[in-house]
Length: 220
Image 1 (cartoon, rainbow, N blue to C red):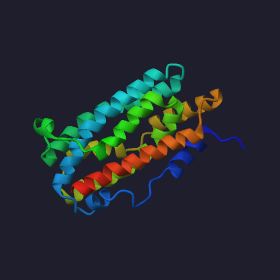
Image 2 (image 1 turned 45 degrees about the vertical axis):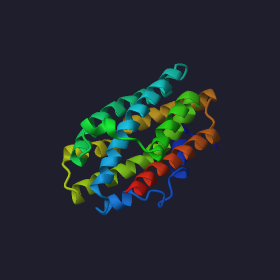
Image 3 (image 1 turned 120 degrees about the vertical axis):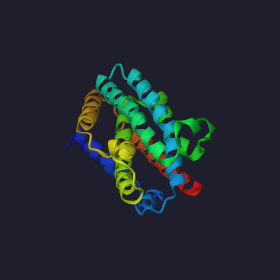
């Protein structure tokens, strides 16, 4: 039986889903037990992650000239990161991590391993393989963001504006899903998708995602 693009995307999300115990910090935030200093560190680390990922996605879009469906996917991701950067500032301000103090912050290597991996994909991965890997990772990230957004309102008294960064990633993105599916479908038709290789990239992304949260938890 021939597998469709939707089959491959659903399999990637399912097979690469993180272990429930892989993230020690989000459950603490969900219970209101994480210190605000940890939330501030999260904001400061994201100040490094977001622009790095945006540039990586733009580079992937440029490399996808021969695969316009993949180029559209990465262009959409880059545009999303630009919006996320705007939403991040009210969260950072609510945590006491305003931009004025950003230059004094030294990012943690364990947190910045994730964007380093995304940058590696931008330089080395076949575009369609990266589409599959990134889509699987974003599924887990969106779930974390939904949990955090709820907890910030319930336990920390944050405003909607301060939660907008997490709301943005937690919301369903049907247009992006359709763009990813179109990219994978085009790659299948062209024979340019390597599912095993894509899953290898996805496993690395998920591992570095787990490292991000574990590093923040240890710093707490």
